[in-house]
Image (cartoon, rainbow, N blue to C red; front, side):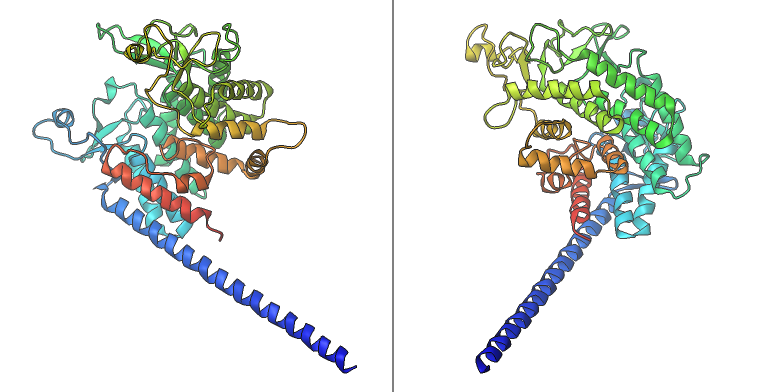
Length: 468
C-alpha cells in the first residue's frame, strides 16, 4: 500500500511539474512574441516617420521627389522664374509611399499615418491632367501642373496612381462617389481605357528618325501590359464596372492569342518581346528581337494567373500550364533562366541577338549564352503557383501542396491588395508570399526616396506577418 501511495505521489508531482514547465514556456514565448511585435511596431513607425519627413508638402497634399526631379530638364520645364519643387508620381515613389503610409496607419491604428496616405492621394488627384492622365512628374506649385505631360504616353504613373486611389476608396467606410478620390479614379480609368487598342492590346510608340512618325508596336517585355491589365481588372472588380472587366478580359484574351504555340517550336510556349499591331511577332526591331523572352513570359504569366484566380476559366489555365512546361524545359540547374532564347528547334540555345558582340566571344554565328542578365526569381514563384492551381492526380510535392493551401486561403481582398501594391511598384509579383518580400534583399533603387519607401514597405510586411 505504501508503495502504491509513493508511486501516486510521484506521478502527481511529475504532472504538476510538467504543467508548470508548460506555463513557463508559454509565458516566455508570449513575452518573446510581445517583444518581437513591439520591435516591429517601432521599426515600422520609424520608417514611416522618415518617409513623411522627406515629403514635399503643399496645402493640397504630400508628394515625394524622384530620381531626376532636380535635373536641367525639370528646371527648364518650370521656367527660370518658377522654382517650385518637382515631385514624381511614377511607380515606387509617391503612389508607393502613400500606400505604405495608408496600410501602416490602418495596421497600427494611427490616424496620422492614414491621413498622410490620404494626403498623397489628394496630391495625385490635384495634379491630374484634364485628360485624366496622372502625370509622371509635376510642379508642386500653388496651382500644380504636370511637366511635359501632354507629350507623354507613359501609362505607368496612371496605373500606379490608381493603385493608391483605389486602396483609399476601399479604406473609406462609405466612399462618396462625388468625392475627390472617386472623381480622380473615374477620370484616370477613362483615360486608361482610351489607350487600349480595340484588339485588347496596349500600344507603345518607339522613337524613329522622323519624330512625327514613331513606330507603333505592342511591347511585352516591360511591366506596362501587365500593369494596365491589372489596373482595369481591379477597377472592374472594386467599382463593379462592366466595361472595365471587358477591357481586362480583352487584354488577357489577346495574351493567350499571342502565346507561341504554333510556331514550329513546340517547346517555346511563351511570349516574344514585342508584337506588331496586327498581332504578329516583331522580327525586324533590334531592340525587340524575335526570341522567346523570359521577362515577357513572366509578366504575361502573372497577368493570366491573376485572371485565373479571379475568374477561373479553362483557357487561361491551359495557357499557364503550357508556359510552365516551356520554362521547365529551359531552366538551368541553378534554378534560373537566361534572358532570351533563340526560336530554333532546340530549347538549349540562349540567344545572342540582343548582344551581337557575344558572337565574337563564343564563335562566329553561334547562338550561345546571352549574358545580358538572368530573369529574377519571380519566375520560380510563378511556376510554383501554376502547379498549385493546376488539378493533379496523385500526391503533390510538399512545396506545391503548401502553396496550394496558401492560395486557397487568399480572399478576393487579399488578391486585390497585392494587385494594388504591384501597381504602385512595391512588389514585383501580385501574388508574392509576404515572407519572401520581408526577407528580400534591397534592390538597386533609383533615388533616396525610393529606398525609404522600400525600407518602410519591408517593415510593414514584417509587422503584418507577425502572429497577432
